[in-house]
Amino acid sequence: MMADFNLLHYPTLDRQQRLQRQWRMLGMGAGLGAALAGSVLTAWSWQIDSLRDQTRVLQSQLAEHKRLDKERQQRLAKNQEVQKISAQLVQLQVHQEAWRLLHSGLMEVAPGDGLRLQRLQVEAGRIDLQGHAPQAQAIAHVAQRLSERWGLSLSLQSLEAHPAGEGAQSVSFAWHASWAALADGAVPVIVGKP
Image (cartoon, rainbow, N blue to C red; front, side):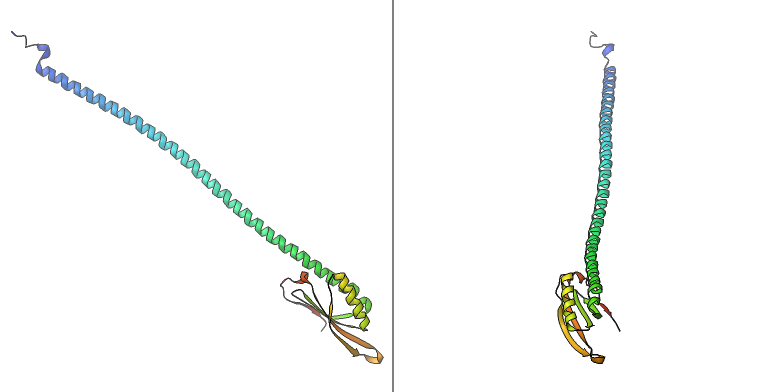
């Protein structure tokens, strides 16, 4: 008779229970989805933090490499400048030694035979000497001694005899030589008596 009518399975109650189950399942699904999304976002956040840390480390390494490269370039430029100055100093020493030899030779050898130098010109490694001597033999003797001392040959450019007073005679001469150590590209050096 009333077997179909059961208060425990009333259609409205059944609908309410089904609706409650759906809401519970929806809530559990939303909670599970939120938990899953939260864990994914947390993992991404950790990865982003890790990538930021790696980026900072790489940027600091790059800055250090740039600083070291700049220092290396500065050292290289300084070394090149030092080498350039060192080469100039070596050239200057050679030039100074040549001038010392020239001066000492002229001061020690020439006066002994009565030679008087009137003019010395040095231009681009070429030496021109002009002066007077009491006799022609003294000129040849001094030229030979200076050539041996300097390690180069003096060539006689001109020789003129001048009569002096009371039977004495003097001889004017001009010598020429090439001395590469005196070539420095500077302006000509002229030393002479007025």
